[in-house]
Image: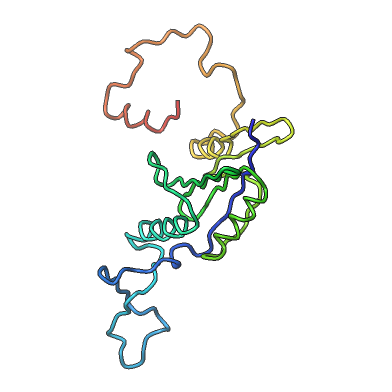
Length: 200
């Protein structure tokens, strides 16, 4: 087991770190309370990306890719949101999801160096050792060299959506001895619509 360091960082104001290309101008109405006196009918030309623009995610990805390329990373061919860097003494992998970056490094000094390199371009919040990513809980035991992924949050959310928070757990969700067949399937449009709300 390699027992790499796995940390998570959250880029501060990711989208506004990106510039809007001059050949793709974007304009916004002047916000209430910030109108230029006598020019209330005019709009503002955006220089930086705002949350909510259609191209925001794309422009942020291009900025992130540029930063990581400048510090020696390459884009993974099979997944453009994964970046890697190898040398004879270390390996680093970065998995990106918008402004959340998972840093996977073969040593603590390499991890510290990587965080410093990224911080030279953008500020971020250091979330420390990985505990959650994309609503998946991660339990890591470095002594035993194990890692577990739990989806409790999603399961609890689904139980809440379908009003099943107070149900008792059982081994099999059907009564013992029940025999099911195609005749038990919904046939009318009303039955089909009703069954779309049933989580089993």
